[in-house]
Image 1: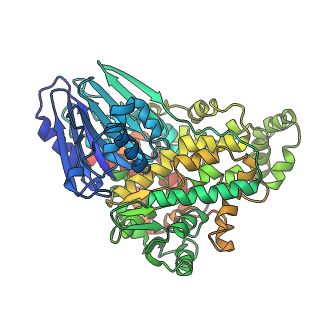
Image 2: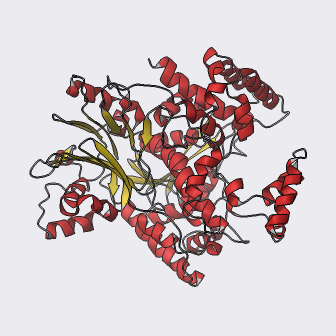
Image 3: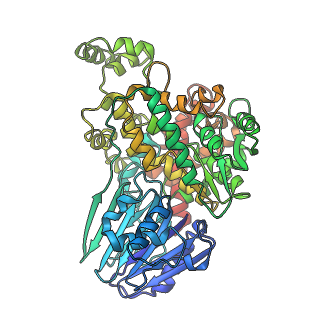
Amino acid sequence: MCGFIGYINGTNVIDHHQTIENMMNTIIHRGPDSGGIHSDDKVTLGFRRLSIIDLSDVANQPLYSADGNIVLVFNGEIFNFQALREDLIAKGHIFKTQSDSEVIIYGYVEYGVEFVKQLRGMFAFCIWDKKNDLQFIARDGFGIKPLYYSENTTDGTFIFGSEIKSFLPHPSFIKELNKNALRPYLTFQYSSMDETFFKGVFKLPPAHYMLIQNGKKKIVQYWDKKFHAKEAPIEKYVEDIRSTVRESVEAHQISDVKVGSFLSGGIDSSYITALLRPDKSFSVGFSDYEDMFNETNLAKDLSDTLNIQNERKYISADECFEALPKIQWHMDEPQSNPSSVPLYFLSELASKDVTVVLSGEGADEIFGGYSWYQNSGKMQQYEKIPFGIRKALRGIAEALPKNQYTNFLIKGGQSVEERFIGEAVVWDEEDALNVLKPDYKNGPSVKSITKRIYDEVPGDDDVTKMQYLDLNLWMPGDILLKADKMSMAHSIELRVPFLDKEVMELAKNIPSRYRVNDIDTKYVLRQAAHQELPEEWAKRPKLGFPVPIRHWLREEKYYNMVKEMFTTDFANKFFDTKQLVGYLDEHYEGKANRGRYIWTTYVFLVWYKQFFIDMK
């Protein structure tokens, strides 16, 4: 796990060595062990290394082919690198390191850009092919590793790298807020477009690569995550999951440094921990509301059962509010998923003992774990009524005051494309538009963002459509981004065995009724996990990573802290601050639960202050 930054030189005359040093220094947390630079007439590359496999200096990056024509910077791990290496050696290539990085160089030399299809792992990399004047930039199939790029410069410099903050020291980069990003953020709680909160800075989509040659750019998709169910007895899929996930965990634990696991009380991290059997697991809870927001006792019980040492930490509200500016600085863009906060402290805890941790991200999206995917019994009965009738009843309900009954009729008369925008829903879009100032209302609608993904799977059933949307929007935009940024903030590598190409290829075949049914969510995965875990763990419902934000915001200290932010001059630039304070007062006085509205807005303002007021 490392980080890189690079650029194709523009027309301005600058000191490339000093510039890339300054850019690298902003991401030193991603690679505290060493750094390296390549600079020539066309391209400048910088790399920060966190040593995981082949700890020797010879594996330092940038890494070169034997003839010096190919230059590589690479962030991540390739879990099938040993088999690929043997193949390439058989074809005559000579390796000078034991690292997985060198496999990418000679894989490209042997097979060209299509070699990316053979990679099994989490990665973002750039290959600079001097001889062919070709820049080849690629990102892994799930988006586990971040990769940004921009041409928003004064002289045509093309910049790319692992974190946006590393773009800022380049003298030609234009730092400007993307006004269109705020509207959808309020509803999604994360940056949901390819263009980021920095105008002209984009995310390379997962499972895509970019080619830059002779001034022309081309983006290509090389893999997809579409489901295509194949009928087979559920017992077969249970055994296939058991063997495939076990093999994935074995591949993901390859390391020359210590490996641990994150552990909550849920099935996903428990299953990974039971297969890994590390020396230590790591868990966090909240000291102020221990009874309601604490899974550490469950984690401790499972660790004791598995004979694993469990390290725990309890976090206070003061610690969380104090760390929030630093968390948002590491995130690069505003991200108000409350679980980012405990994940930051969990990573800090683990960093004291290990350099690599395994975690359970991805199981919900792949195997159907979210409650959204499972209709209530009442809704299942209601959906037996023809859709035309339900749609008419919806029209009537929409004209009536909102309550649980009208909401039920409205939902029952909507298609899945209308009612489901992803796992995260914070601000109602109408409320968001009402609180935004005119300059910030012109961003894309929520439906326009989800539509392009739904349009790829028009014939799938509702469960599959929802999973596909989350796999392509929520997971890379929220879940995986915070996993990468919060772990890297503390210089540790987080690996996610469920998000493995082989696991996904298996999951694509599983019929949706085995994923989600009347009995449970993640049904077939729970059957597989039951072989490794006590029954109570395999059947435990999903809890997420609960954070007591709504309680904190009813305490005078934090109410005042947020109110002070809501009444700043720069808050008034974006929002009707009278409305914001009204929501805050409603919540503080217990008249309504506005916790997520308040937190999402507060996080944006904390982020904006970090990057556009405090950082000039």
